[in-house]
Structure formats: structure tokens, C-alpha cells
Length: 176
Image 1: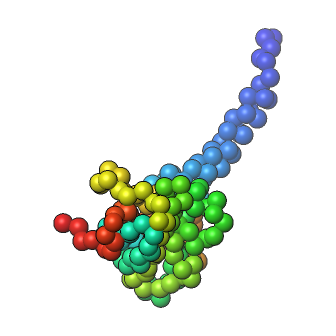
Image 2: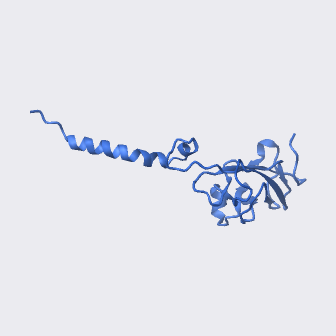
Image 3: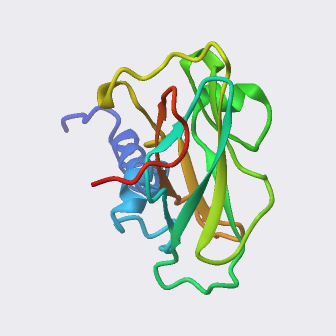
């Protein structure tokens, strides 16, 4: 009778692989965002966008309006901004959403949850902040800042879409 090496070990490994697959998939945010993950709840998050380029002069702070697309969420739902920016998190202030130019340009929010379709953020540039030479030198919040429901049951978030330029003349600029 030929001996098969470790037949029970193969069965154990197969069972472990089958049991570990859902855990491995749930740790990936991409499968949750694609709707493939059955473990992470499928929950809509709002979307936030600045309607214009945020222009701030060195040594000044500007307040930018942020338009909120609720995407079917109730207007009474509490919302909040958050940061995925390691430099902003290193500041240790949850109100800081993004940091650019070695900390010379900072985007913050009030830190107070809000409701509705409008919010505000402040952009501050220190007196020695580097002036943007053109669109290629603007700062984008991209994946640095996000918006989400305060009482969300998921790790899903939506981006805060906003671009910042440091210019000698400050104030919101309309885009063409």
C-alpha cells in the first residue's frame, strides 16, 4: 500500500484557505468599494466639492464654501470631514484636513459635525508660503481629505474635491 505524505495536512490547509478567503477579502477596501465584499456594509456617502479654485495669499486665510451632494442621504444626517493625509494627522488636530508646502499651507474645518448641502473649510498660507507658478503647482486635496456620515456603519468615505493655489491676490476664483 503506497503511503501518501500527510493526507490530513492537505485537508487542513484546504479548510484553512477556504475559511481565510472572506477575511482576506474584507481587509481590502477595493472589494468593498466595488460592492464585491459581502462583509462590509454597502452604504452611500455624500460627496463634497469646492465650486471654485481656492486662492490664498501668503500670510492670509480664506474661507471656502463646500457644496455637498447628499446622493440621497437625508439633509438632517450628521456629516463630518476627515483626513487621510499623514502630514495632517501628524499635526495632532483632527480639524486639519491637509498640509502642503512643508506645513506652510493648511486646510482645516471647524471640527463640528454639520448637516445640509453647504459647509466651509479654511485655507491658511504662512507669509513664507511658496507662490504657485501655475496650475501644475496647485495643491489638490485629492485623496488627502474626505467627507462621511458621522454615524456610518462602514469604512467607506468620499473625497473632498478641492484645489488650492497660493497667489499674491487672494479669494475664490471662478473656473471657466
